[in-house]
Image (cartoon, rainbow, N blue to C red; front, side, top):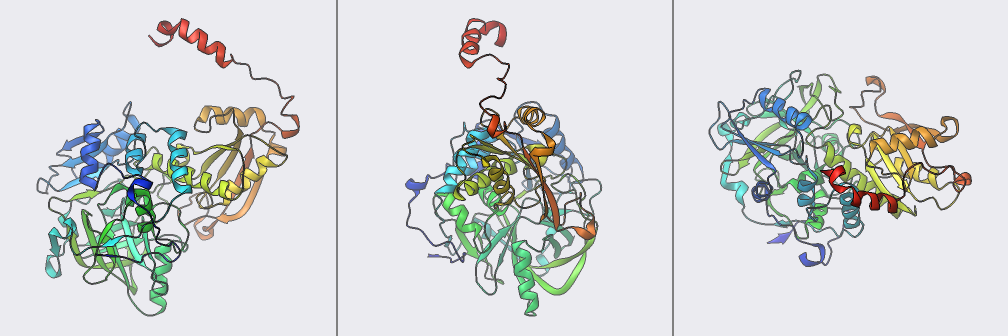
Amino acid sequence: METVNTSRRMAAPETNGAATGLRAYEDLRHWLEIVDSVGELKKLRGAHWKLEIGTLAELIARERQGTIPALLFDNIPEYPTGSRILFGQYCSFRRLALTLGLPLESTGLDLVDRFRKKLSSLKPIPPRLVKTGPVLENRLAGDDIDLYKFPVPFIHELDGGRFIGTACAAITRDPDENWTNLGTYRAMVHDRKSMGLFTSSVSKHARVHMEKYFKQGKPCPVVVTVGQDPLLLLGAGSPLEFGSSELDYCGGLRGKAFDVVEGEVTGLPFPAHAEIAIEGFMHPGDIKREGPFGEWLGYYGSEMQDTPVVRVERIYHRNDPILCCARPGRPPTDYSLANCVIIAAHIWDHVEKAGLPNVKGVWCLEPGVGRLFNVISIKQAYPGHARQALYLASQVLGGAYIGRFVVVVDDDIDPTSIFDVLWAMATRCDPEKSIEILRRCWSGALDVAIAPENRGLNSRALIDACKPYERRSEFPPIAESSEELKAKVREKWRDLIFG
């Protein structure tokens, strides 16, 4: 066995599992066993791949009271028993904590803080190359290749086709610098042996890799896993620096290396415990109309357009494979909560490393789909502290891409509470003095507020909802009971209040 060099900038650390904390599971199937044991897995049988499964995922996310379970579909019409689809991996704090190797009781800002602390001391661990793994139990080549072998869902009514890649990890390698990237990009099935891969923005790392190959007149190799350890999916969607490998990053979060095998035709590494891996090439000039698709912003953010085609040369899969999917759309969705936690932790980590003191919390409001409406709480220490927090939170890695609003609040405001945040904005913010507009910021191809011909750049509203620094000691006191009085009365009248 050997270590795979997947990253340009992240050096291999000297570490051990005990130092970083081993998780309680080894692969997706073990993760599902744990999720089932804590009552957060719902098994559904007989739902159809065309619209019914996608609509059930939407209804349960939007209308179910209490914890939203992960949904494992089986007995799908037209497919054999055991060909399963998983939706809703990250719709609860407990499942996010399990995936990130954190205490299962972690919720809200506590979960963000724990993850932020893990990020601040993260030491990447490169993957370990092995000869075999469960993903190699089945190998399809030549005429046996068939993407429709799996129950690929038709998710939204206005979608342009069946999308096999909605909770996937696309693996590419920089042809010049030899570092490996994992990214989450949608993939629409064109036919049995080809699919589109929509990398949207020119800044996306897989898009950069692809264009480098094309400029050299070469096909771009790619492996797309559509069933994998939930941590790898979180990693594939995380904001990492260009040149950093998500495989190394996830190894660091996990506390030990991921085992990977190499593709027969591309040589690319992919997880040995993946459920399904699709290997092929994108060729220069080989494009096909793709989309539309209901996207994570909650809209059909792009029309049908020419998209590079992946010509599939191998499919590898486990016995009775689990196809991992997500239903993006109007929030809440399969991963809107995960976006809130992951992006908030990255913003918090980066602003502190940039020198911002007294940060008490960062949260991305879920209606803002984890990026568009971000809140940072500080304990003001000096004049201009609040503005410094706003500018940093809007532009550090994590907050810079397709942002819209950044709000800074005092430390008496809970940044996870939409009610508290709006109250602070309404009562502590004088629009003339408290709102700044940044222009020509980093946006993307799915930003529906921007006309299609102008996408790539947008503006940001930075809202100072703190008490004015120079008046903070004279600011009127809040009209609410003290914590001591509330505790006393709460204890005396507990049966009336909570009975």
